[in-house]
Length: 376
Image 1 (cartoon, rainbow, N blue to C red):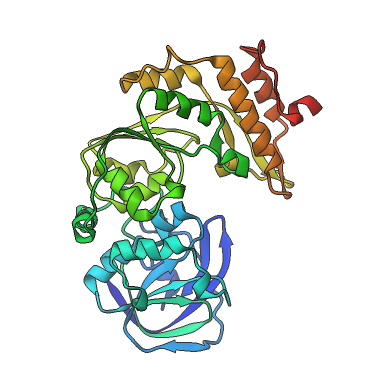
Image 2 (tube, one colour):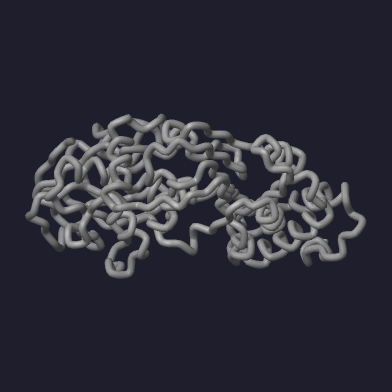
């Protein structure tokens, strides 16, 4: 832990990708490493905030918590990972967080306080910085985990291991539990196309399905803690699993992007971790300048890999799988995904080739295709 005196703390001034500009103006800023925001261990990706005159002052001892990122996955996986070791070292200090300038601190997402409560931070010890503020004594610990980093230290996992008993978590027993993202294509978000068809078949095989978006943090963790086998459709829910420490369970991830999301962080938490490369054709979303947004891409399943992966888990999907029924569901999702896109985004030109390639193997029997396909 490092402690500094008379530190100006700026509200969020800009967000480049998911990298925040703002927060503490640490002394000798360029020489600092672990006090700053990193995406690899000891490699800061932030920049010196533009210092503005301080309008408020905090005289109580405080520790730095991070940026209240509105995206749950980024919030948990990288922006709040200082909190638990910080309050373990200094349990009586205030915890400071930044949001956008002049934004109402009372309007932050409810799950932010739920996560802080899980870590053990009382609401009255939270201070949210939305105006330039001078912290008279500010301490900071390194991030407990970074998004593309190495495995967390054993001591960090020990702190997480203690939380379920402290909160009286009652794990919900589950043999095989599938954590779904079905429905997000209709919101223009990154998705596996036709996931609803997969979910239907898994339910027929007795697999427990749950959508974390409809549950409290506590309810999510009770299901994660009680599962013998967890299967994730790659997405933010993986980072929700980072709120727990070690559980002897098997975890499978149906990949949607190139990177192995959260692999270094999850590996020491579980008995077995497997990533299944089930990606078929990828429908890409870009802005009008041609810049890509991989987290918004919609992905067809590569069904041979999908069926082989579930067979290895002891689930015989192959005997129930109807490729034409799957493609009908996937194309319906694709149409909804394109319709829901933000006005400043455009589908990539090559998406039409992806549609043709995915449909060519089973074109017979398909009676509904996306409007974009018909127009093309």
